[in-house]
Image (cartoon, rainbow, N blue to C red; front, top):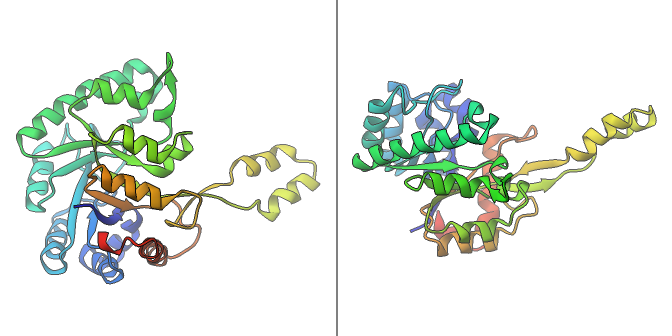
Length: 285
């Protein structure tokens, strides 16, 4: 059954300030009962509190985050912390782990991307032997074309043992339709990020720049109005997106917002929750 939860990247400041349990209690009070762990240090204290949140709050740990190698993020990697990643997954009853981004060094060439795919595919096989599924999360660069073929298709073909975690905002930013993309990869998708796509208003500073003759600064603002948004506060058709996700048997739909533009994270999550309930999807919480 499909379940709506939260991507914990949004909660990293709260995790640091009040801990994992109190943070997850706050989102449980809103109505969320699943979380994907990302950008949260998997210290013994945090893991212990995650176990407590699972047991006392009924918080479902949808997945843990990983990468091939360290890249400045607080996470356990496949090459350096494989045994701990498996142990934490088992302890938290998390049957999925996910790679949140193409490594920066892989972005430099198709050859490096293919090498990443080959290495990742081998880890997916190894994790499967431990009862854990590995997924890859897209951004917009996966919709670049190489000899007429989308990079996301290249990755999917080259790493067939790796599932896909689709992000509807980044699909839209990559120039593709989220509903059609979910349908296209329905046999590979278990998790989908619910993140709206909003066109903001030009700030007053942009017109000040224009008045001063700084056309370049004005155009920077003009092309930079694409924003992240609370679910239902942008332009994506979430009724259609969620229907397709459920029909595709996605297991988790994870609310995420990369930039809150000054709002409180729990207020943002409340807005997304309220809008999803208004869409008639209270049954997925």
